[in-house]
Image 1 (cartoon, rainbow, N blue to C red):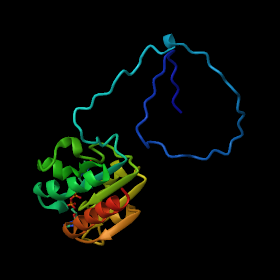
Image 2: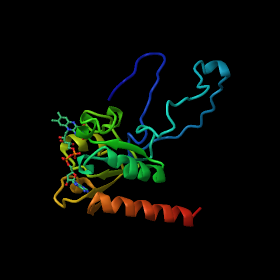
Image 3: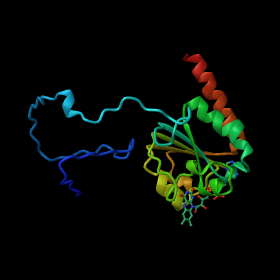
Image 4: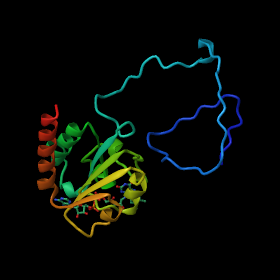
Length: 184
Ligand SMILES: Cc1cc2nc3c(=O)[nH]c(=O)nc-3n(C[C@H](O)[C@H](O)[C@H](O)COP(=O)(O)OP(=O)(O)OC[C@H]3O[C@@H](n4cnc5c(N)ncnc54)[C@H](O)[C@@H]3O)c2cc1C
């Protein structure tokens, strides 16, 4: 257990970084009515400005992530970014993809990249190496699209599609667009 002993305590938690845990311990609930004035809030957020209009990995409810199975950087523009746009998702990638300069380093997720603890993580053409899984396994629902049924990511997946990303992803985009149009 960590104890903070300073008079002023500031705690920041990333989205979904802690799951719900049931605690069997007895507890008493006590009504408490604090009396606070504006002076008690010395730090106030007046506005939040984002550098881009894209959803960031840390803020995203859904992350669409792709790996070396995508073959080249040109395949993000048409397919991966479109899927992310339809879902209102952030885009991410595996380490080799950012090392090769196919995607910016800020999108690299995993042990040595950004951690992802999102509600839905869609991994496309990513094998599921231990270093990648280490950074994304806190995500609630993981969907894997991979041609290789033996890809390690399938063992960590909630839903898996064994198939070619170049066929599965466009079909998925079409279905999602049709669903959105029907429910608009
Ligand atoms: C110290 C250390 C730290 C590391 N940290 C990280 C990290 O933070 N994040 C990270 O990601 N990696 C990290 N790595 C690298 C990691 O070990 C893997 O090499 C890397 O994750 C593999 O990336 P990949 O899955 O994109 O590529 P690959 O392993 O090459 O996998 C590509 C996958 O795409 C599939 N595929 C191919 N064609 C298609 C298609 N048409 N449709 C669908 N699927 C297809 C293949 O079956 C394969 O499973 C680290 C390694 C080390 C040693």
